[in-house]
Image (cartoon, rainbow, N blue to C red):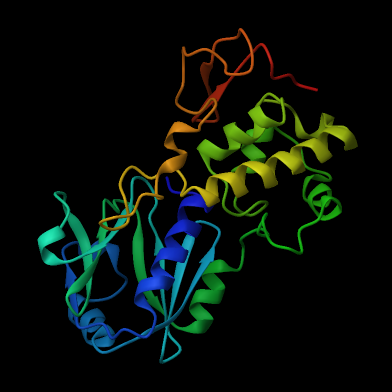
Length: 271
């Protein structure tokens, strides 16, 4: 599932290409992806212009010129591609928005969605999300406050969107590895020193991943050499049985509350 770095990379690219360009065509191939009848959705968007692209947690909010917003959540395996009809990706698309000769393809949404909402509706949809971890207002003290009084496994806490917005399976494991903590570490046992180390790892991993385009499996558009560059940078995620890059250990995979967890038992510890 695309996480904060992937969606922030998309936000930057979308902002470069779509601002103030009128939507000239709408194709809906999967009606469950949208929140109204196809005809109503299409009529509402034809001629609309995107004036601002915002990311909130794992969501993208397209601010339209009339005040409404398109809320995108890619969920499992969702992808975006921007190109001409000739560059159309060889996979099924759920929704397509045309901007003149170029089309924004929404692919592989499955449980994902693209909903047209009012300002009030979009704010309500985002209302329960936790704070942004790369926000300039996030400090070590505020981060420590997010953990205060919490209980349970570290990974379970990090992927809880009501506590920390934007982290999913991949980056929870990568952050725990960078902090040299087991993903199963009990949050209530973390000392102030370990909380500080965890905060530093959160900022480091998310920033580095964002700068090199996250781990998406395909480029956003023809000529895009940034998107997906983090694929080869993962230290533990999806590397079961491979050697640890920090020492002589071997990456293992377990399940925690139904989620895959990757870590090195040699260099990651509970405290």
